[in-house]
Image (cartoon, rainbow, N blue to C red; front, side):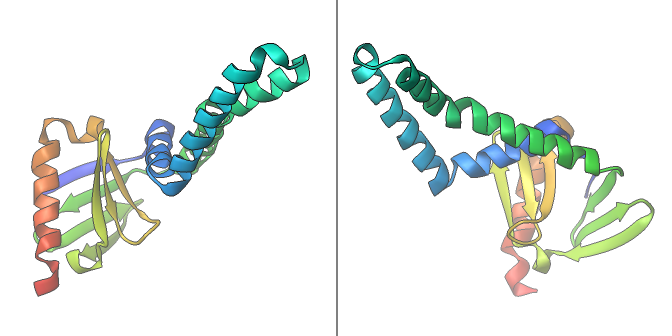
Length: 159
């Protein structure tokens, strides 16, 4: 049994978004675009004017600085909208969720997947909703928690 009190921070939400943007086909395209623009900037820098140089610099910054900053701004807004802690109790039956005194239960059958990222573990209820448990929250029990959850996920088809 594992019990956690969760309230994702802007940093947690930002990291989650960055994992999914840069771990997807969109992220691959972003990296290819940035590499191509860098190559173009190196090749043409001395032969182009100031306006073209500014465009090249902005294009290089688009996915390396501007997009992460925009994602962080969105994460700050999301984090501010979360006004209550979420109490999560993971046991053999499922997840017992308490928010502002309201209780809910999610059986292991309803959990779609569990994702282990370098700085967090995400338990997905569907493709877009889930619980973010940061390494800061999980502490030294991170690996044991992950093993517990994945063992319950492996056994859900037989229930």
